[in-house]
Length: 309
Ligand code: UDP
Ligand code: MG
Image (cartoon, rainbow, N blue to C red; front, side, top):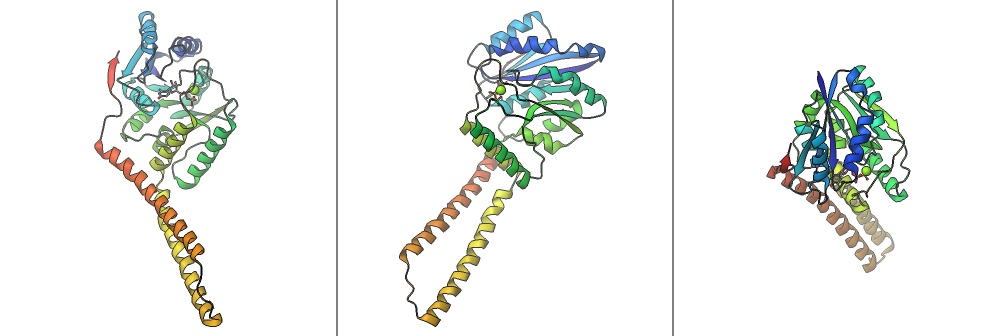
Protein backbone atom coordinates (compact mmCIF):
# COMPACT_ATOMS: atom_id res chain seq x y z
CA UNK A 1 0.00 0.00 0.00
CA UNK A 2 1.22 3.48 -0.86
CA UNK A 3 0.95 6.59 1.25
CA UNK A 4 -0.13 10.13 0.46
CA UNK A 5 1.17 12.87 2.75
CA UNK A 6 -0.77 16.11 2.92
CA UNK A 7 1.39 18.94 4.23
CA UNK A 8 -0.45 21.87 5.77
CA UNK A 9 1.49 24.92 7.02
CA UNK A 10 -0.44 26.82 9.69
CA UNK A 11 0.26 30.08 11.43
CA UNK A 12 -2.45 31.25 13.85
CA UNK A 13 -5.13 29.20 12.15
CA UNK A 14 -7.07 27.63 15.06
CA UNK A 15 -10.41 28.07 13.26
CA UNK A 16 -9.23 26.61 9.99
CA UNK A 17 -7.47 23.48 11.31
CA UNK A 18 -10.69 21.44 11.89
CA UNK A 19 -12.46 22.97 8.87
CA UNK A 20 -9.61 21.91 6.64
CA UNK A 21 -9.63 18.40 8.09
CA UNK A 22 -13.33 17.91 7.36
CA UNK A 23 -13.15 19.37 3.89
CA UNK A 24 -10.10 17.28 3.00
CA UNK A 25 -11.72 14.01 4.10
CA UNK A 26 -14.73 14.77 1.91
CA UNK A 27 -12.49 14.58 -1.11
CA UNK A 28 -10.12 11.72 -0.31
CA UNK A 29 -12.43 8.74 -0.78
CA UNK A 30 -10.79 8.19 -4.17
CA UNK A 31 -7.64 7.08 -2.33
CA UNK A 32 -9.10 3.69 -1.36
CA UNK A 33 -9.66 2.79 -5.02
CA UNK A 34 -6.03 3.53 -5.65
CA UNK A 35 -4.84 1.54 -2.66
CA UNK A 36 -3.39 4.58 -0.96
CA UNK A 37 -3.33 5.53 2.68
CA UNK A 38 -3.42 9.09 3.95
CA UNK A 39 -1.41 11.08 6.47
CA UNK A 40 -2.13 14.70 7.30
CA UNK A 41 0.88 16.61 8.53
CA UNK A 42 0.10 19.96 10.09
CA UNK A 43 3.13 22.20 10.44
CA UNK A 44 2.57 24.75 13.16
CA UNK A 45 4.74 27.73 12.34
CA UNK A 46 5.00 29.05 15.91
CA UNK A 47 1.34 30.01 16.29
CA UNK A 48 0.38 32.09 19.29
CA UNK A 49 -3.21 30.80 19.37
CA UNK A 50 -4.72 27.34 19.87
CA UNK A 51 -3.59 25.85 16.57
CA UNK A 52 -1.56 23.11 18.29
CA UNK A 53 -4.48 22.25 20.61
CA UNK A 54 -6.80 21.91 17.64
CA UNK A 55 -4.40 19.54 15.91
CA UNK A 56 -4.13 17.48 19.11
CA UNK A 57 -7.92 17.23 19.27
CA UNK A 58 -7.94 15.84 15.74
CA UNK A 59 -5.17 13.42 16.62
CA UNK A 60 -7.22 11.97 19.47
CA UNK A 61 -9.83 10.73 17.04
CA UNK A 62 -7.60 10.14 14.03
CA UNK A 63 -4.17 8.49 14.10
CA UNK A 64 -3.42 9.74 10.62
CA UNK A 65 -3.01 13.30 11.88
CA UNK A 66 0.56 14.41 12.57
CA UNK A 67 2.14 17.61 13.81
CA UNK A 68 5.47 19.38 13.62
CA UNK A 69 5.45 22.45 15.81
CA UNK A 70 8.14 25.14 15.60
CA UNK A 71 9.78 26.95 18.49
CA UNK A 72 8.80 30.27 16.89
CA UNK A 73 7.49 31.68 13.62
CA UNK A 74 9.99 30.75 10.90
CA UNK A 75 7.81 31.68 7.92
CA UNK A 76 5.86 29.64 5.39
CA UNK A 77 8.96 28.65 3.43
CA UNK A 78 10.46 26.98 6.51
CA UNK A 79 7.10 25.36 7.29
CA UNK A 80 6.91 23.84 3.82
CA UNK A 81 10.46 22.55 4.10
CA UNK A 82 9.76 20.98 7.49
CA UNK A 83 6.64 19.39 6.04
CA UNK A 84 8.58 17.81 3.20
CA UNK A 85 11.32 16.66 5.52
CA UNK A 86 8.92 15.00 7.96
CA UNK A 87 6.58 13.48 5.40
CA UNK A 88 6.84 9.78 4.66
CA UNK A 89 4.48 9.50 1.72
CA UNK A 90 5.18 8.08 -1.71
CA UNK A 91 3.19 11.06 -2.88
CA UNK A 92 3.22 14.43 -1.19
CA UNK A 93 0.83 17.32 -1.62
CA UNK A 94 1.22 20.78 -0.13
CA UNK A 95 -1.93 22.74 0.80
CA UNK A 96 -2.86 25.94 2.61
CA UNK A 97 -5.04 25.44 5.66
CA UNK A 98 -7.37 28.33 4.73
CA UNK A 99 -8.91 26.19 1.94
CA UNK A 100 -7.65 28.50 -0.77
CA UNK A 101 -6.21 25.35 -2.31
CA UNK A 102 -9.39 23.38 -3.05
CA UNK A 103 -9.11 19.69 -2.03
CA UNK A 104 -11.75 18.98 -4.69
CA UNK A 105 -8.95 19.13 -7.27
CA UNK A 106 -7.12 16.17 -5.73
CA UNK A 107 -8.74 13.34 -7.76
CA UNK A 108 -8.00 15.17 -11.00
CA UNK A 109 -4.43 15.79 -9.88
CA UNK A 110 -3.99 12.10 -9.19
CA UNK A 111 -5.34 11.12 -12.57
CA UNK A 112 -2.49 13.10 -14.15
CA UNK A 113 0.05 11.36 -11.93
CA UNK A 114 -1.23 8.09 -13.37
CA UNK A 115 -0.52 9.41 -16.84
CA UNK A 116 3.12 9.55 -15.89
CA UNK A 117 3.63 13.06 -14.60
CA UNK A 118 6.01 13.52 -11.66
CA UNK A 119 4.21 16.55 -10.37
CA UNK A 120 0.87 18.32 -10.76
CA UNK A 121 1.01 22.01 -10.00
CA UNK A 122 -1.75 24.58 -9.79
CA UNK A 123 -2.06 28.20 -10.74
CA UNK A 124 -4.92 30.56 -10.30
CA UNK A 125 -6.01 32.34 -13.40
CA UNK A 126 -7.96 35.08 -11.64
CA UNK A 127 -7.04 37.18 -8.67
CA UNK A 128 -10.51 38.24 -7.67
CA UNK A 129 -10.89 39.31 -4.06
CA UNK A 130 -7.35 40.65 -4.03
CA UNK A 131 -6.43 44.35 -3.87
CA UNK A 132 -5.76 45.60 -7.46
CA UNK A 133 -2.42 47.17 -6.50
CA UNK A 134 -1.23 43.83 -5.19
CA UNK A 135 -2.31 42.00 -8.36
CA UNK A 136 -0.56 44.61 -10.48
CA UNK A 137 2.75 44.25 -8.67
CA UNK A 138 2.44 40.47 -8.60
CA UNK A 139 2.05 40.44 -12.40
CA UNK A 140 5.05 42.78 -12.75
CA UNK A 141 7.11 40.47 -10.57
CA UNK A 142 6.39 37.40 -12.67
CA UNK A 143 7.09 39.27 -15.90
CA UNK A 144 10.40 40.51 -14.54
CA UNK A 145 11.36 37.04 -13.30
CA UNK A 146 10.64 35.59 -16.71
CA UNK A 147 13.15 38.02 -18.21
CA UNK A 148 15.97 37.80 -15.68
CA UNK A 149 15.86 34.22 -14.47
CA UNK A 150 16.46 30.96 -16.30
CA UNK A 151 14.27 29.14 -13.81
CA UNK A 152 10.64 28.91 -14.85
CA UNK A 153 8.33 30.64 -12.39
CA UNK A 154 4.67 30.65 -13.43
CA UNK A 155 2.40 33.66 -12.96
CA UNK A 156 -0.24 32.91 -10.36
CA UNK A 157 1.47 29.68 -9.33
CA UNK A 158 0.33 28.39 -5.96
CA UNK A 159 2.33 26.26 -3.59
CA UNK A 160 -0.50 23.71 -4.00
CA UNK A 161 1.30 20.86 -5.70
CA UNK A 162 1.31 17.09 -5.81
CA UNK A 163 4.70 15.43 -6.15
CA UNK A 164 6.34 12.04 -6.23
CA UNK A 165 8.79 11.02 -3.51
CA UNK A 166 11.57 11.35 -6.07
CA UNK A 167 10.81 15.02 -6.59
CA UNK A 168 10.44 15.64 -2.86
CA UNK A 169 13.89 14.17 -2.28
CA UNK A 170 15.29 16.44 -4.98
CA UNK A 171 13.78 19.47 -3.25
CA UNK A 172 15.09 18.35 0.13
CA UNK A 173 18.57 18.14 -1.34
CA UNK A 174 18.41 21.91 -1.81
CA UNK A 175 19.29 23.00 1.67
CA UNK A 176 19.56 26.73 0.99
CA UNK A 177 18.56 29.02 3.81
CA UNK A 178 16.95 31.72 1.67
CA UNK A 179 14.16 29.61 0.27
CA UNK A 180 11.83 30.55 -2.55
CA UNK A 181 9.85 27.40 -3.16
CA UNK A 182 8.17 28.55 -6.38
CA UNK A 183 11.63 28.84 -7.89
CA UNK A 184 12.89 25.62 -6.32
CA UNK A 185 9.99 23.66 -7.86
CA UNK A 186 10.92 25.01 -11.27
CA UNK A 187 14.62 24.45 -10.73
CA UNK A 188 14.37 20.75 -9.90
CA UNK A 189 12.39 20.21 -13.10
CA UNK A 190 10.59 16.86 -13.61
CA UNK A 191 7.48 16.44 -15.75
CA UNK A 192 4.93 18.87 -14.42
CA UNK A 193 1.28 19.24 -15.37
CA UNK A 194 -0.30 22.63 -14.66
CA UNK A 195 -3.92 22.85 -13.56
CA UNK A 196 -5.75 26.16 -13.55
CA UNK A 197 -8.51 27.30 -11.27
CA UNK A 198 -10.35 30.44 -10.23
CA UNK A 199 -9.13 32.15 -7.09
CA UNK A 200 -10.89 31.11 -3.88
CA UNK A 201 -11.02 33.41 -0.88
CA UNK A 202 -9.87 32.14 2.52
CA UNK A 203 -12.62 30.72 4.78
CA UNK A 204 -11.68 32.16 8.16
CA UNK A 205 -9.14 34.60 9.55
CA UNK A 206 -6.87 37.11 7.85
CA UNK A 207 -3.94 36.72 5.50
CA UNK A 208 -0.54 37.29 7.15
CA UNK A 209 0.97 38.75 4.04
CA UNK A 210 0.78 42.51 3.76
CA UNK A 211 2.12 44.42 0.80
CA UNK A 212 5.51 45.08 2.39
CA UNK A 213 6.04 41.43 3.36
CA UNK A 214 5.17 40.35 -0.17
CA UNK A 215 7.51 42.96 -1.61
CA UNK A 216 10.42 41.68 0.49
CA UNK A 217 9.49 38.11 -0.46
CA UNK A 218 9.62 39.04 -4.14
CA UNK A 219 13.13 40.46 -3.62
CA UNK A 220 14.06 37.13 -2.03
CA UNK A 221 12.74 35.43 -5.13
CA UNK A 222 14.77 37.65 -7.43
CA UNK A 223 18.04 37.34 -5.55
CA UNK A 224 17.60 33.60 -5.06
CA UNK A 225 16.97 32.80 -8.70
CA UNK A 226 18.73 35.47 -10.70
CA UNK A 227 22.06 37.22 -10.65
CA UNK A 228 20.97 39.62 -13.39
CA UNK A 229 20.79 42.62 -10.98
CA UNK A 230 24.52 42.21 -10.36
CA UNK A 231 25.07 42.81 -14.07
CA UNK A 232 23.18 46.08 -13.82
CA UNK A 233 26.07 47.84 -12.08
CA UNK A 234 28.48 47.05 -14.90
CA UNK A 235 26.00 47.92 -17.64
CA UNK A 236 25.05 51.26 -16.08
CA UNK A 237 28.72 52.02 -15.40
CA UNK A 238 29.65 51.44 -19.05
CA UNK A 239 26.68 53.51 -20.24
CA UNK A 240 27.68 56.41 -18.01
CA UNK A 241 31.28 56.29 -19.25
CA UNK A 242 30.10 56.50 -22.86
CA UNK A 243 27.78 59.43 -22.10
CA UNK A 244 30.53 61.24 -20.16
CA UNK A 245 33.00 60.72 -23.02
CA UNK A 246 30.55 62.13 -25.59
CA UNK A 247 29.88 65.13 -23.36
CA UNK A 248 33.60 65.87 -22.98
CA UNK A 249 34.08 65.74 -26.74
CA UNK A 250 31.06 68.01 -27.18
CA UNK A 251 32.38 70.59 -24.66
CA UNK A 252 35.89 70.65 -26.11
CA UNK A 253 34.62 71.07 -29.66
CA UNK A 254 32.20 73.81 -28.59
CA UNK A 255 34.99 75.63 -26.74
CA UNK A 256 37.30 75.46 -29.76
CA UNK A 257 34.71 76.53 -32.33
CA UNK A 258 32.63 79.08 -30.40
CA UNK A 259 34.98 79.93 -27.54
CA UNK A 260 32.03 79.29 -25.29
CA UNK A 261 32.94 79.55 -21.58
CA UNK A 262 32.17 76.25 -19.80
CA UNK A 263 29.48 77.27 -17.38
CA UNK A 264 26.99 75.16 -15.56
CA UNK A 265 27.18 74.68 -11.84
CA UNK A 266 23.53 73.49 -11.73
CA UNK A 267 24.07 70.94 -14.46
CA UNK A 268 27.12 69.66 -12.62
CA UNK A 269 25.13 69.17 -9.45
CA UNK A 270 22.55 67.21 -11.38
CA UNK A 271 25.20 64.95 -12.84
CA UNK A 272 26.88 64.38 -9.48
CA UNK A 273 23.56 63.58 -7.83
CA UNK A 274 22.60 61.19 -10.57
CA UNK A 275 25.89 59.30 -10.69
CA UNK A 276 26.18 59.02 -6.94
CA UNK A 277 22.57 57.85 -6.83
CA UNK A 278 23.33 55.13 -9.31
CA UNK A 279 26.41 54.17 -7.34
CA UNK A 280 24.44 53.85 -4.14
CA UNK A 281 21.82 51.81 -5.92
CA UNK A 282 24.41 49.42 -7.29
CA UNK A 283 26.19 49.16 -3.96
CA UNK A 284 22.80 48.33 -2.49
CA UNK A 285 22.36 45.47 -4.95
CA UNK A 286 25.80 44.17 -4.01
CA UNK A 287 24.78 44.45 -0.37
CA UNK A 288 21.65 42.38 -0.99
CA UNK A 289 23.61 39.51 -2.44
CA UNK A 290 26.31 39.81 0.19
CA UNK A 291 23.70 39.67 2.94
CA UNK A 292 22.15 36.56 1.41
CA UNK A 293 25.58 34.95 1.09
CA UNK A 294 26.32 35.87 4.70
CA UNK A 295 23.12 34.19 5.93
CA UNK A 296 23.82 31.20 3.73
CA UNK A 297 27.38 30.55 4.99
CA UNK A 298 26.21 30.57 8.58
CA UNK A 299 24.40 27.31 7.81
CA UNK A 300 21.73 27.93 10.40
CA UNK A 301 18.94 25.35 10.65
CA UNK A 302 15.90 26.29 8.57
CA UNK A 303 13.54 25.60 11.47
CA UNK A 304 13.58 24.36 15.08
CA UNK A 305 11.10 21.82 16.40
CA UNK A 306 9.39 22.28 19.75
CA UNK A 307 7.06 19.30 19.54
CA UNK A 308 6.15 16.64 17.06
CA UNK A 309 4.10 13.48 16.68
N1 UDP B 1 1.61 30.57 6.91
C1 UDP B 1 2.67 30.03 7.63
N2 UDP B 1 3.61 30.88 8.17
C2 UDP B 1 3.55 32.24 8.01
C3 UDP B 1 2.48 32.77 7.25
C4 UDP B 1 1.55 31.91 6.70
O1 UDP B 1 2.76 28.82 7.79
O2 UDP B 1 4.42 32.93 8.52
C5 UDP B 1 0.59 29.66 6.32
C6 UDP B 1 -0.84 30.04 6.61
O3 UDP B 1 -1.29 29.51 7.82
C7 UDP B 1 -1.58 29.44 5.43
C8 UDP B 1 -0.57 29.57 4.30
O4 UDP B 1 0.70 29.73 4.92
O5 UDP B 1 -1.89 28.08 5.59
C9 UDP B 1 -0.86 30.74 3.39
O6 UDP B 1 -0.94 31.94 4.15
P1 UDP B 1 -1.98 33.08 3.88
O7 UDP B 1 -3.33 32.51 3.62
O8 UDP B 1 -1.86 34.04 5.02
O9 UDP B 1 -1.40 33.72 2.55
P2 UDP B 1 -2.16 34.07 1.17
O10 UDP B 1 -3.07 32.93 0.87
O11 UDP B 1 -2.88 35.34 1.43
O12 UDP B 1 -1.05 34.21 0.19
MG1 MG C 1 -4.48 32.19 2.04
